[in-house]
Amino acid sequence: MTERRIIAETQRLVLRNWLDSDRDLFREINADPKVMEFFPFRRSHEEADAFLGRLNAMIGDNGMGFYAVALKPEDEPLGFCGLSYANMPSVFPQETVEIGWRLATRFWGHGYATEAASALLALAFEEKEIEAVVSFAVAENHRSTAVMRRLGMHRVPSLDFDHPRVPDTHPHLKQHVVYAVTCDEWKRSKADGTAPA
View 1 (spheres, rainbow, N blue to C red):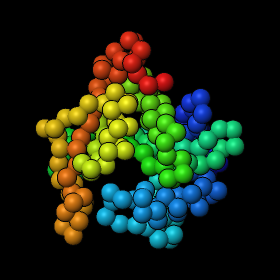
View 2: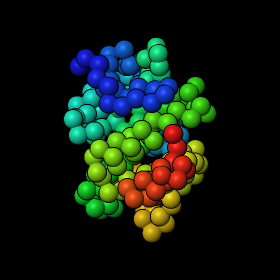
View 3: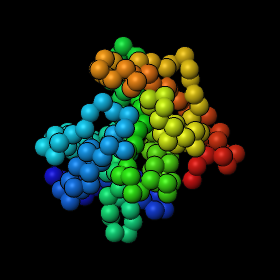
């Protein structure tokens, strides 16, 4: 893989491209039944390695992609967080940008997902001038929707949808709820001090 390249930094975290040394962590995430509880599949080591290669190939100079999240100062990988086009034309307009995250279970409960995602919202709205960002999850995935609320995102019930890539064999995972925040909303929350640091 490529040499280390930092996309964003926070007080505790670095968001960067993926390194060969991240492979075991990425395999762990993709095989963990708790992490993947709301997904209709688990990935083998080979499938996880291939997916990791695709994620690294997605990372560009435009601030889009799913980046490795690593803990300072050791650069220990925790999981990933990123901005990407939603790429579901039957659900969202083509230009819709989503934010998403996934961390290994041993790093849950420390605010890392909120911290990393907040840095990417700043990138989206301050540097990339994206008009709005959405996030979505299975309706019962309360951990993820709690992060969305902490980020200042609000529920948009009119956008809720059945995920087109979830097979009929997993009907309980089809329904997804949608949260969103606009650039103006985010800037107002930052100005009044309610945006997450």
